[in-house]
Image (cartoon, rainbow, N blue to C red; front, side, top):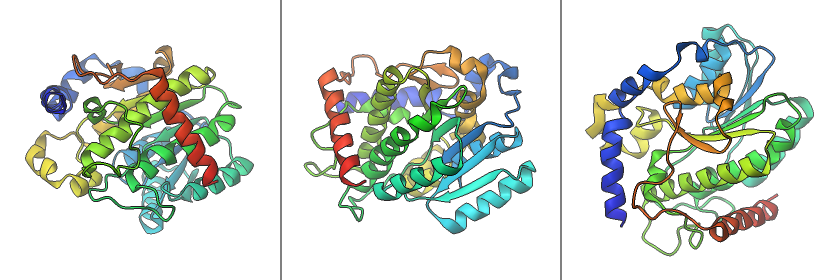
Length: 317
């Protein structure tokens, strides 16, 4: 079944996830959707120092938004902040150094943040793909700690902050790679099978989609969405998937093309006309399962995921 899913996904990707796929889809975009100015609105972008996150932060800054960059590496983050200020002319760019694989650092960050700032839009962009099993200082598998648990803690901790503001939104940068994975709550730490970083990442991205759907039902005042940016030429792809990057070459999307739907979901009034909880690709809701792929999960499986995350979040608070 995994072989079928992977083949079907790759064929779909060649049609839709490449630069040419974006160019084809963009013919249906409404040009005025992103002709907006957002002074007075505050946006948090995790992983905002490079790739899609930086491209997103730059465009928000150019439209007058207050931007909070949440990054792990101080030197790279300072450089990104300076570049965004210089190119946008916007001084309201704040930098927060947080390791999203360390739960305690996230809890501490949110506690301090909510004392000093407001927030309208959270963009969960940060992610990692470690190709050898690596544990954090808390003994957590690093991909899961960053992509799922860290994202879960940051989002749940900021929900009360978001609910106080007008038109609150949460956008999570997932991946079409999740289409090859069925939710698996029996091995969240990747301890029981041979470690494959690409498949672990895809499983994390499936978990993000499930969490987005559940949050949308639980918190109707906030518009939740997740999205696939396509196959994008970013530093992360070059580092974590060098073979794929080399094979795809010029067919990969630019960072600006990868960021387009993130920006649309974060900025466009038209985005909130779509139901909360959807998975988007090129500004349109997209299916979360491939035909005949048997990747649907039961409510009990999804509840188990949340229970495990809640327990871990409490343990490392």
